[in-house]
Image: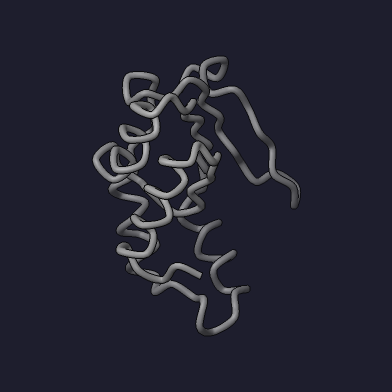
Length: 117
């Protein structure tokens, strides 16, 4: 729906200004990339919760292959994102952290604090 960072920014600010809760469904592998959402949200009194998808590159590439042609990401993009990935921490402003892993065709959600990583 949004397709551009400009539109995303407009929607983010509209949500923050009106107090509307929102979810950012995007790969934000680094602290600096997540900062554009977390800092303004926290400043406006929102609670920031992170779901970290812990996926091996091989799994990500296999899942990517099942996507429709337009939705496929080049393998170099998948691997590049994996290499830049930084596990989210509370010091970024998150009040809760979860790790999501694929297991036996399902997603397993674990409290990241309990996992210790």
